[in-house]
Image (tube, rainbow, N blue to C red; front, side, top):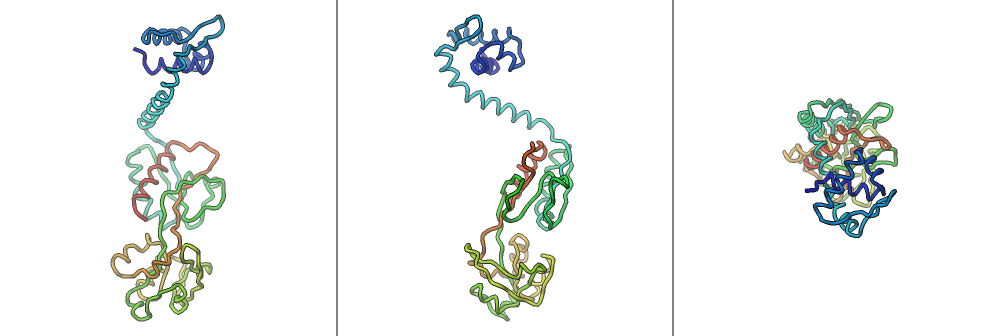
Length: 294
C-alpha cells in the first residue's frame, strides 16, 4: 500500500515537472522516485503520468487525485513537525523584562512553572519601570502595559486590566461618596510623583479631571496603602488592589466612569526568527496571564 511519503513524491513530480527535479528536491535517488510512482500506480490501477524522453505529463486522473490529497498532506506534515518539536527539549537562556510590580505578581510563578517543564531553559528576569531597549540590552521578551506606539517590535496582546478609584470606608463616611468625576475636585486625592498623574481620565470618551491632594508618592504600593489608611482617594489597576478591595479595606468608587481597559502585551524584536524556547515561553505566558483574570 502506498504511504504518505509516496504521495509526497507524486506531488513533488507535479510541482517540479520532472522525476529528476523531484528527486533532487526530496533528496532521493531517481530510482526511488520511480519506484514510488510505480507503487501508487499499481495500488490504484491507474496511469498517473505519460512520459517522454525529457518530461512527464500528468493524466487527468493524476490531477484529480492530487487535488484531493494535497490538503491532507499539508496536515500530515504539519502534525509531524508539531510532534517532532514537542519531543525536542527546549534549551538555552531567555532574558525577560517587565514592570516590577506586575512582573513580581504575574510572571515569577508561570516562569518557574515553565522552567520546571523545560529543564534545559534558564531565565533572567529584569524588573524595571522603564522600557528596556530590547536590541541594546539583549532582551528576548518584554511585558508592556498600555497601548503600544509604532515601533520595530512585534506584539501579542494577552490580557486587559481595569483601572479603579478607591478609598477606605472611613474616609468615604467622613467626606462623602463622589457621584461624578467632577466631585473629585472637593476630595483629597493621592497623587503620583509624575505631575501627569494629576489629571485622571474617565469613561470611554477619555473625559479628564484635574485632581488635587496633599499626599504624593512615587511608589504604587505607598499610594495604595495610604488610601487604605484613610488619607484620600487613589487610582490604581484593579490587579494591584484586588486583595484590599475584597477584604473591605477599601471601596471602589465611580466604577461606572472607569476608563477603557489597559492592554497587556508581550513584545519582541521584529525582523528576526524567534528562537523556539522564546516562542514556547510566549505561548505559555499568554495562556497563564490570560487565565489569571486581571
